[in-house]
Length: 130
Image (tube, rainbow, N blue to C red):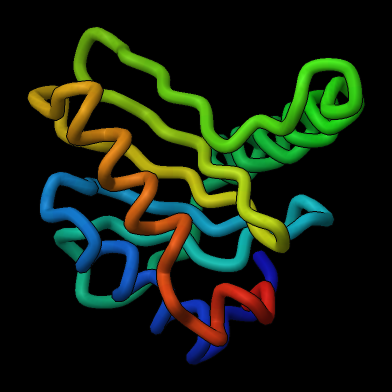
């Protein structure tokens, strides 16, 4: 895992503050490095296990695969996945990928509102790419 910075921890706090139904978040840089992995219930980020690191690397590979289709189809802002026990959102920001798990009870409109809040966080941290 790449060294966490005070900026990535501050960004995590801002993301968790964007919606109380965010359960977990991961921040991944454009090279596929895990910047931060944290549960909303934890006061500090945790060291992700090998499976989660592999999952984050897969997210990075998928992001780059989607970018090849940008010219033909337009950019992907985020991907929303509804699973039996939870929901997931992968948000593609200019300098980082944000992975979220969300409460199963969130409606699609609530998910969209949360992603918009995160996307438009007025933060120098967001612009710097953590």
